[in-house]
Each structure stands twice: as C-alpha cells, then as structure tokens.
Image (cartoon, rainbow, N blue to C red; front, side, top):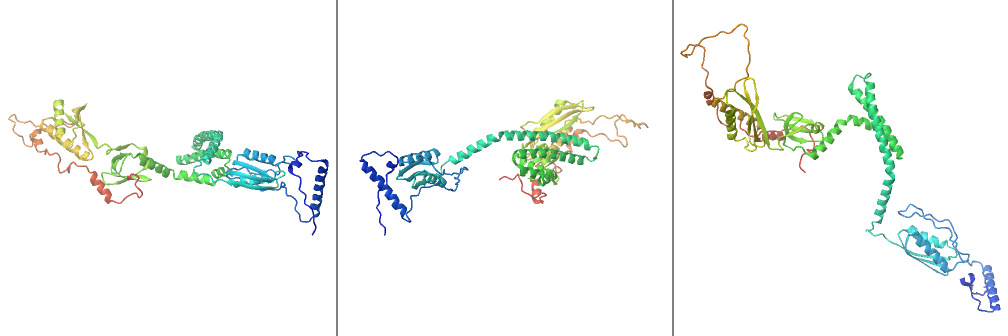
Amino acid sequence: MDRFWVVPAPTRENKAGKRRSTSSCSGWFTGIFSGLLLLLLLAGQDGIPTPAVAQGGAQATPTPAGDGTPLEAPERVEIERTARDEEIRDRLQSILVATGWFTNPDVQVRDGVVFLEGQTRAEEYKRWAGDLARNTQDVAAVVNQIELTTPSVWNFQPALTGLREMWFSLVRSIPLVGFSLLILLVAWAVARLSVGAARVSLSRRLSSPLLRNVAATTIGMVVFLAGLYVVFQVAGLTSVALTVMGGTGLIGLILGIAFRDITENFLASIFLSIQRPFHTGDQVEIAGILGFVQSLTTRVTVLMTPDGNHVQIPNATVYKSNIYNYTSNPNRRIDFGIGIGYEDSITASQKVAMKVLAEHPAVLKDPEPWVLVDSLGSATVNLRIYFWIDGTQHSWLKVKSSVIRLVKRAYQAADISMPDDAREMFFPKGVSVRLIEPDGEKQPGSARAEPARARAAHDPASVSTDAEAGLSSEARNIQEQARQSRKPEEGENLLEET
C-alpha cells in the first residue's frame, strides 16, 4: 500500500488573497511546496473523487400552482472567481427575498455548503431555490430545509385575486361588447328594412299573405344571423359562428317558427302564474267568455261557463285580453231601465222604486242604490235603477229578475203607467168603428180594461218565486259539477297554492 502525506489545504482566506503575512520567507516557501506535493499525490491516486461543483445542466422546468409562469433557475450565478461564504449567502439571500415566493427566507453558508431555511407555498418554489443554490459558483453542496406551508381555510387572497382578474377582464372586454352591440343594432335595423322590402317585392309574386310573411321573415332572420356571425367572429368564437350559420341555426329557425305559439303560451302562463289576476273558482270574463276558473296550465286557461261547458282559452289570448274578475271584489252593481208615462210624477216613481230596493234582502244598503232619470223617450220618461249585491252570496241574474218584478208590481199598485213607445200605424183599407151606448153597458164582444191596481194584486209580492229558484249564487253548483266532470286539459294547475 502506497503511503503519502496529507498536507492541509490553503484556506478560503488564502484563496481570496487577503491573508496577513506573519511568518518568515521560508515559511512561505514551505507552504507552497506542501501544496504542490499534495496535488501530485492526489493526481497519482486512482478512484479519489475531485470536489464536485454544480455546473449548469439541463433542469426540468417547473410550473408553479396558480401561476402560469414557468420557473427555471439560472444555470450559473457568477460572483467572483473565488467566492467567500459571506458573499454566497448575501447573494442568495437577496435573490430569494426579491422573488417574493418565500416567507422568512434564511441562507447560511459554511465551507461551501448552503443551508436554506424558510417557508413557501409550492413545491416548485422549493425546488427552484435548491437549483439556484446548486448552480451558484463555489457551492459544494445544498441542504434545502425550506418548509411547505398549507394555506389557511379562511384565506381569501385567491378569491380576491380571482375577482381582480375578472374585473380586469371585464374592463378589457368593454370595447368588444360595445362594438358587438353596435353590429347587432345595425343588423337588426337592416333586417327590419329587408323584411319590409321583401314583402313589397313578393306581393306581386306570391298571392298568399302567409307565404309572403314567412318568406319575408326568413330573409330578415338571415340578415340578422349574418350580423350575429360577424359578432362571433370578432369575439373569436369561430365554432359558435359556424354553428349559427350551419345546420343548427337553420333548424333552430325552423323550430322557432313552427313552435312560436307554444312558446308564447308557455311564457304567458309563467307571467299569469306570477301576477295571478285570478284564482281557481273566480268568476271572470275573458275575451267575451263568462265562466268560473278551473285551472291554468302551461298552454291554456280552463273556464266552466254557467251553462256547464268547459272552455279552453290559450294563455297568450288571456294575457293580451281584458280580464273582468267578478269575484275579486265580492260586491257587484246591477242596473236596468224602466219607462214611465209623461203624466206620472218622476219623484213619486223614484220613491216607489227606492222603497222596493230598501226592502229587498239581497240589495246592499252600502253602497246605496240609485234611481236616476236616464233619458226622455218618445212616449216615456226612462229611469235607470242601480243597486249592489254580494256576488259571493247571491246570483246577480236572479236578484235582477226579482227586483224588476217587484218594481213593476209596485208601479202597477201605485197607478204609475209604463206605456209602450208611440207608434204611427196606417190602415189603407180603413178601420171599422163600433159605438158604445151612453149608459156604459157592455157591448157584445167588448171588455172593460181591468185597473192596474187589480192586476197587481194577482202578482205575488214574495222576494223570490218558484221560477227564480231562490236568490243564492250558482257558483257552488257549478264548482260541484266541475269536480265531478273529467278534466279537459291535463297538466299541473299553476294556480294551486304551494
């Protein structure tokens, strides 16, 4: 086994050229000779490794989480040809602080060995710091003791960062949105003009108004879709633009025309279910149809008329029509006209009618009834009688019949005439006249007119007759019939309370 002497290697202070001369000239030569002898012995031995200094090699490029910028440590950090520990530490410390990726970074260097401490939030940052230290000049080894920190559950910084990025993205998109809206507005205006021009042009070629409207609408839609295509192209949505101009856009156009009424009725049902102008069981009049509401589906509103018939009204028609709800306000006013003779007293006639209204059990005292002079006819003074009833308790048809009957009876009892309109009749062949004897005896075939007061005695004074079948409302009977009948329109009733 070969023997050799181990001579201490010069210190880093000697390499830096800052060593103080404390020995004699012979000591200086002795140090040089010892260093040369050590180098010769090391060079002559096989298998003795040389100190490894990390050279710049190909490193994997990490991608930190949450940051799209790839991290790559520099291949080499040059300081001086022979660096001291303090200089390596200061340089690495300043780099770690400058990145902002590390919390409380601390770098210690002892005899070329770098010790890294601190905290970071990503493994990529830790690996990058280790690569940086290894690629630094005169670094023999790296001890990476940087700890990974787990983000807190209550850390709102990512959310704030996301909101900030969304705000910046929104601000940057304002010019694009404004330009897109301008294009859509121009396309809509041109489409409207195209529809009008197409209708005028096709009026001479197509006799059917329906075909003209469909063709003109199709031309307008094509023009508008062209503008929409430009908007998508400017926004970078090429695939969406091709879809709109391709088969999907055409199919959507056809389906939109074919199912326009269905869509309209569906939207109307949504608005009616939200606004609720009527409820189940209300007596309403819609588009001239009087009935009780049974249900509201996504397509139609179902009514049952007083005749017991189910009527289905499309919701679009219901939403566009005038709706008379006679149940929302339980009180309902009824009026009718009656004529009296010119020789009769108007004031006395009004008092007689008011007495009938005051004594009638179905007529409300508040609001009070009226008996007003309506007009002067050719043979009569026309009065109009107004009164209120509770629609939830009484039938307005039955109460009106009862009041008219009782007022007519009271006028007859008070000898108030109710003459017919005057008529002028011509008899071109003449009329035979029979004279009556002065003694007032009845002539054959003649009859003395019965006084009005006597005729009124035969008219019953009861409030309701058998023919009127009481004064109660028929709503309950109709609702019972509706429950027993088959539903004409299946589907969920949107008026049901949830």
